Image 1 (cartoon, rainbow, N blue to C red):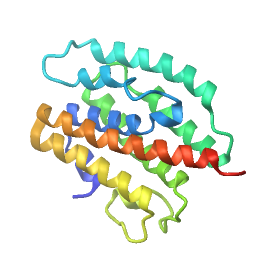
Image 2 (cartoon, one colour; image 1 turned 90 degrees about the horizontal axis):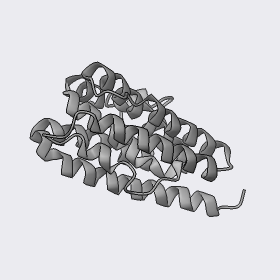
Image 3 (cartoon, rainbow, N blue to C red; image 1 turned 45 degrees about the vertical axis):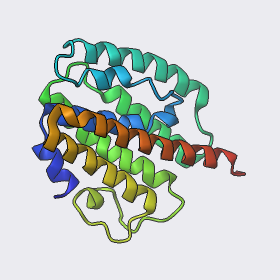
Length: 192
């Protein structure tokens, strides 16, 4: 099943986790630490306070906006990637309604794949990430391929296991964040 189909079939929790996972993997671009989005992850569990999502989001926005201003990358691809990550954060809905998180999850999916495409040193044969999301994967660059697999895994785990899949979704996101942090670090050490 393609990523587009998985997003179309996902429930509210799956959509929120999908968007959050994309944002979480891109936190290194915003200068955030590994724990900044934990309250949002916790708000997706059964029995979580309904206002926890909004409060966690507001806290993350304040912290990541300040960090992003201080840590902006100086090269073109890095700048564009930071802008895309910042847009993901700003577009997150304050209330976790299915309609709101569906639009956000879809936009985060595109933005995260584009970020990985911008930061990948290998070329991607597709003219856009839309083809990747629809399942056309021939000639895909390694960083984009890994991000696509992570997005699919998060949605499949949550569709198959509901709230019990949140731990695995967070693990997948953490792995992707480490990869992107290494890419960003490597790029910052390269001569310009």
